[in-house]
Length: 248
Image (cartoon, rainbow, N blue to C red):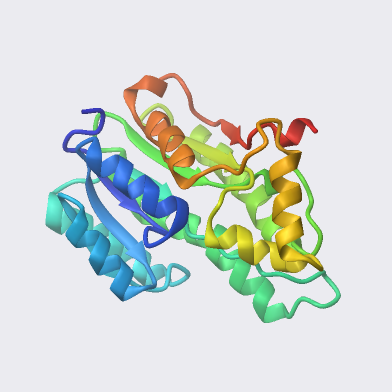
């Protein structure tokens, strides 16, 4: 088992890619602290997985992030890795986007990474090899209509990733994965920025070289690779997983 007895905090764990990642890590022997906003879905996932505890809360609250770390230490006695998947869209162009929505998007997609990493890094440095894996997006490299807050937050997340990789090497590896169009609720919410959401999703699928949307399980397989010893010489890197759409 690739993650036997490793302890990981998984944010955004109650749906989509975060949920698939939690399942994949659990199947490989990890012990998990699950983070999300939906109490019902979180508790159901906690019961489903072998060794997991769910803690509902607001990922933009620094004290909640500190509580996630303390829960890992109290329940499992150590912390080996973070899988950071929480994200929202903040739809609307610069002229129309409410300032409150801008701050909410930046806080969810970027500041939460800083908060949880801040409290986790001292513990990650204590083990053999710590890992921080940020679930970013191809929006870090490519603009999308009416997504200024989302694109800015994802690009900034990569800058933060690279900085932490430099600051905490060699004890902690820090990387990012950058998904393209993945069939999750977030994709369909994103499509609402277009006049015809169903057409927008279909165009995204056809724009990939592989002519299909990604699945949460596709992303989970890459995430597992990135935190396992199979990728032991990779740090400070953003890896796209997008069906080739950035090549079009």
